[in-house]
Image (cartoon, rainbow over all chains, first blue to last red; front, top):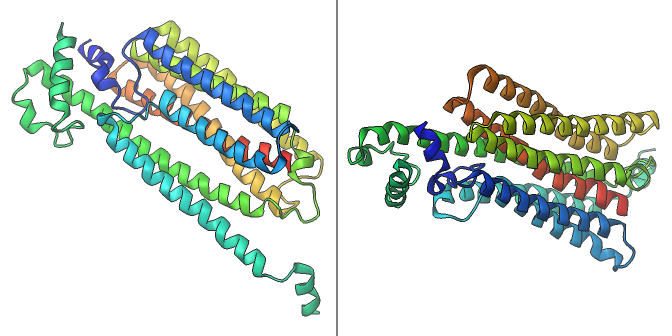
Length: 130
Length: 228
């Protein structure tokens, strides 16, 4: 039984991604806060995607910001990745992952838009080959 | 209470080697024997969580490659239908609600497992399974509808990228559903053993990560695609 007491000990529970709060009510409470925030952000995302009230070119930017905010909510309230001193390894791994993801997506888009820009339209290429 | 003593000990140890990656050789000698068996158990839980977190990050990087492919090819419709004509946002909204709620019930299940509450654990896992299966059913229905309308993965580069990205997420959710049933069976057969609880930790991390990927997916693919 003793490991249960240790797992419930708040000083240790926070050190694991996915580790929970110190008791039943507190643990479920954290998930409830996360669920509420994520639901709110999702509603705003779906509303903004369909609305005509805002300037249209701003919509993709707003959607990206909302998505990143919601990922942050999921990380903090569901996966329990926090900035606590015991969580530093998890945060560093996450930071490295985010770096690679940004290089991959940003780099691909950057290179491919330049390639598309510099390339002749496809119908002209086809005509040259005739 | 031994819990309070452990908390004090944990706070004091936290600064020199919080993960006890040196397996606590120096600190062990200062602790009573009961503490020491207990401490190595806890440190294993931390290392398992950390290792699985690194695997999940590598999975996220794999998904980011699919996202990059989709973003590059999203305009390459080859004269076929674009996302604006194909996507049904109300279907996506129901899928999102299913996955978000299942992420919450998965958290409840992990609390139930940790506290050895059978009703919480089995109940929440069953709800998680139903929500996840509903998600997969809706997605399969959507895919079948697209293929029936002549918008299958062979129609254009855009649709190839779409089916690869969304299908890969769907495969992950399907694998997660199998894992969920396995976890229920293991807890039922073997009880709340520490190794089973570590597997449950990995499962809940996996399930929450799938929800994070879905957030990126419904934003980039469905909301941005339908808005064009």
